[in-house]
Image (tube, rainbow, N blue to C red):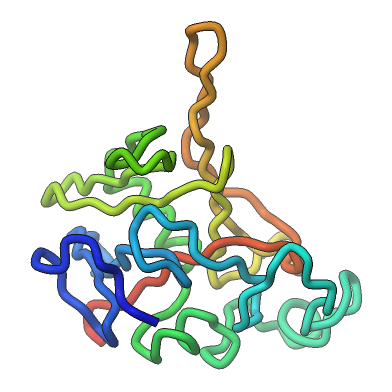
Length: 205
């Protein structure tokens, strides 16, 4: 996998993948690209939660950790609420410094960044959300596939157990000259559904 090719001179790299320091309180460093993408505007690959191989829409092989109501790992069966490194697609595919973000880190991203919806990022025809740091003005772009952009976190929802926290980003809808859009929100989703991953890294690593 080749690292993101956009703006290489202005970003640092780890394991050939670029990141941005948004000066967040936690020190979390955000990748400039989704897992499986080569450019910030590319969607990248979809993954089921806790699987480390991409999952296409036509793949009918099932979920590696069992079936809903009968999972063999994570949740009530072992009280693990956060992915182990060996089940974290970002860690496995990009190296052990990289990982999937926690729900708290996504909340932090929303809190300490201005969120700007765009429908044609850098004339690529791709819509999504730009997060601009309130602390240093640096930014990252999270693309959407069509209308929605579903992004996994590494943590299960405490109240639901078998349902994983995720963020989703609406692309603005334009109808009869009016714009209909929603902000970045936190929801829960069944773990055997397909979502995108934006890798992060801790600053002290």
